[in-house]
Length: 137
Image 1 (tube, one colour):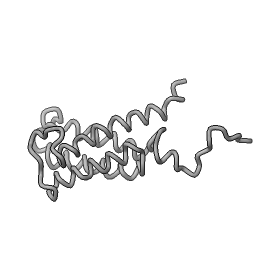
Image 2 (cartoon, helix red, strand yellow):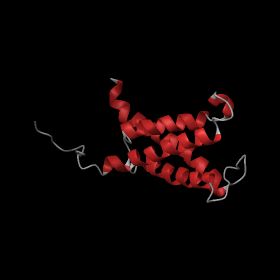
Image 3 (cartoon, helix red, strand yellow):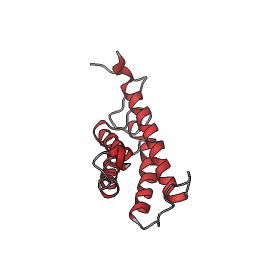
């Protein structure tokens, strides 16, 4: 009975996660909200990560090219975890990498699930049947 709501719940997850992710990009690129470690140079790994977080987050927010964007962002988060967090401790809660791990696997989930409802991908899908269309079998 709840499965009817799956596409909308998936869209809600996509929208919430992308808004949180965009915030990390704006923090690195524009200093808003105020960054903890200062703003990185734009051509540094963290600066490029900020660009990916902002642009990729916007792609996810509107559900445009969701699978491809999620694949790239999942990889970015895996790299971020192993380069900036893993060496501090084995435990993500201790090394500060728990958000990177969570983002990585949520994005990997979107690679396989797609965007869900309320997305550019859904609206532009050639297999989309309009709600008022009569389908004969």
